[in-house]
Image 1 (cartoon, rainbow, N blue to C red):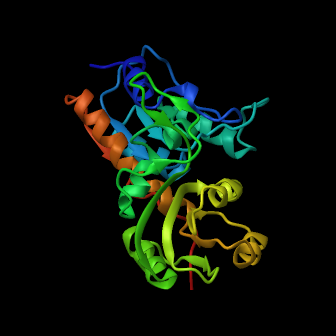
Image 2 (cartoon, rainbow, N blue to C red):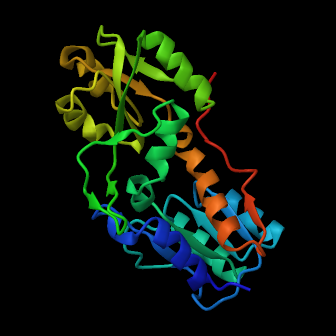
Length: 263
């Protein structure tokens, strides 16, 4: 049976740790590298419902996109969210591993999956950060020209393609022609998206003032939700794990979802 180290090596060969952004935290947050794994649970977020499901399914390893720990932890106790989660994992013999911005940036990761979901196959990388061992560029935002269409029509397509409960959008008075996409919180990339000549940007967690400024800056904005723009990458993690370790059952968390609700 495979060890956590062997699983780590396969996943981080696909999304190398050196592709992450400087502020990020990726890797094995909790667990023994030499421990054997018989079952794996995959989810977007390291949430208590995910850990409870891992225990119920007999999984010794949880693989997520988002990290459980962002900042240095000075105390591990039940008074903090992170501490309580770590205690649960340790007490139940469950390891937690995550691939975050390295999975956003790598070829075939979060943003290539998002681009493909929105019909932007073979999208170009905006401002590549470097190249991988195969000579492929990697970076955060993807972009591609699409057949001209209305913003309302494209926003409706995005909602359907990503199974969003709703999307927020701002109309800059332009048809959709050149689209940029960035899963999760990529509002900081607006200047770069505009400089690249894009008229439409699909991302999440956009701020009020960014919507207010959109029409004056000439950029259509679509906020499709953090969970919805990133969750499709779980299919990739599942596929990699199943192909590399066919003897290990790999499950997708069934109880985890976007906690944002709409009326």
